Amino acid sequence: MTWLTWRQYRTSAAISAAALAAFAVLIVITGLHIAAVFHAAVGPCLAAHDCRWPADNLALDNGPVGLVVEFTLAVPAVLGMFLGAPLVAREIETGAGQFAWTQSVTRRRWLAVKVGWLLLAALAWGGVVGALVTWWSGPKNAAYLNAFDPGTFDVQGIMPAAYTLFAMALGIAAGTVIRRVLPALGVTLFGYFGIRLIFMGWIRQHYMSPVTTTVSIAANYLPSGAFWQLGQGFRGPNGLISLPNGNNIHTVGNGFPLSDVPAACLTHGPAGGTRPSPDVLSCLGSHGFVQYFTYQPADRYWPFQFIEAGIFVAMAAALIAVTFAVISRRDA
Amino acid sequence: MNPSGENTAVETSGLTKRYRRATALSDCSVTVPLGRISALVGPNGAGKSTLLRLLTGLAWPTGGSALVLGGTPRQDPAFLADIGYLAQDVPLYRQLSAEDHVQAGARLNERWDGASARTRLRELGVPLDRAVGTLSGGQRAQVGLSLALAKRPRLLLLDEPVAALDPLARRHFFATLTTAMAESEEGLTVVLSSHLIADLERVCDHLILLAASRVQLCGDIDDLLAEHVVLVGPRKDTAPIERAHTVVHATTTPRQTTLVIRRGGPVIDPAYQAEDIGLEDLVLAYMGAAAPPAYAHLSTVGEEQ
Image (tube, rainbow over all chains, first blue to last red; front, top):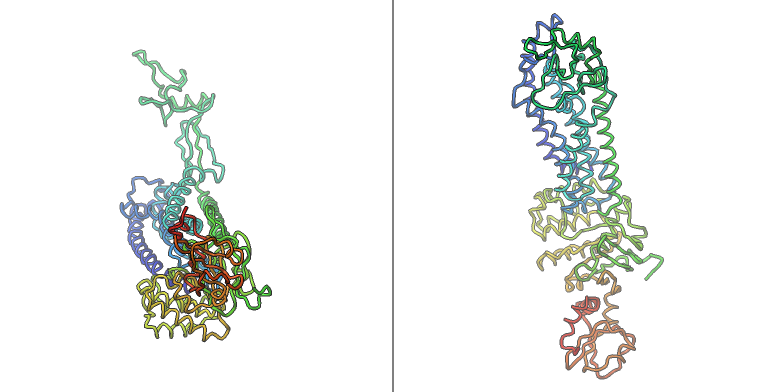
């Protein structure tokens, strides 16, 4: 069975391995360059332990390769579509499954071996891509404190391996249930990106209750490290201050709407108009106004990685379970 | 009919396969004798492929039961090892060569006679190292048959294996099949579906006729031919004949009537001339009887309405 799997997939395996090798070369060469630029720029402050992050003025991005790295988000979809979806669907479409499934091997066993190898390949591929991107992004993550950013979190750490397992399982299940390659490809493509988008945009931020920190309105405060900011604003004695809609909104300080400044903190100008008094921020503070931050602290990065990876691995397991149920119950 | 199953390879009772919109096989009860070549015939869509697929365990019935080599078709290595199956259009892995298939078979079966498959294909001049997708239809059919035989099955199910082949390739195919049957030590039972009745008449000795999703006829070909007779006579009331015999099919022209009957005894009406029936005519008579009314009308040209 393993022999047949290898015989059928050896061309795909060779192409994938070649693509992975080319990607690795690209990543290593540009990664070394980025690391060199990074250390040249921040070496002294690193030695003195007085670097100021994020170092937004540090140019570590080198265009096309950064784009390639972002596109590694599509690697799971590609593997799921072109290796996973045809696993059963192509056997049914070409009818060749009728040869394989009338040998002295049960369909379950046939599936177990094939699924096993494909999931292993998915894990290896996702793992290697993830490791390369994580290493390549090290200096950028340090400089920009962006490890939690959507599109960054997703291509680093253990996420690529978990996503690839999921996409592979999705492709296999879609192909088994739909029994035709092309629709299964579509379901894999849109299913993977759709589900991932939902997690990225709406679910990920709720894995753990966010932390809300309240500080003085005059403070120039940021949570430490590569935190994930979910909300920021001002709260007064009567609750949250929201910025009114419109174009010409005048604000004071760090975005506090002028219209909410109490009269006591305003001075009357000689022309009769009002404007903030010079010490408006401390005045606001004494009137009970504070600023708050809602965020996921930086040290939750790995817990979040494990939670999301766990969810996607669990979904992959459920899809594989469906595949096994379908292949033995439905006609081949 | 042998309920004990000692001399039967396959026994189905009420076997039914319904899909969401159509019934592919309805209440099918057939017996396939052990060690013989059975012909499975019937018009397109009669359920031949469905029946064979149900017997291999590739598809599950929605009703009835099948006993294949003493057991229910199931996903079990021991059962699968005894069944050789060649599906319609000989589906194989197009990019893989015959040699690849032989090697795959060796790894997918405990019992596997790859050497004889290679020898047979070499003798037939079928290239072992070329992708089977590039082979001719006849060569591919030979590869498919050799692979099915390499399993050393006890029951070989062949679904229209020669449909796309020219007469010479068909002859080669059947030669391979009959040689394999003769050489088989364990005893091989073959069920072969085809439209080409002339070919079947040469190699088969048992007939199963499916039409309109039902079994119309099942039995030894020689017996069936002996039981049926063609009566040609003047056009007149057929009621006396129908009382004594079963009229399978009647064709009437203004001047004469041709009846295909299953004999209930000797035909004594001197007005009719009795003729032996050929397998093809027998099959067509039953197919015509089971055909939709529009076809029945076509086959009774000249009848007064």
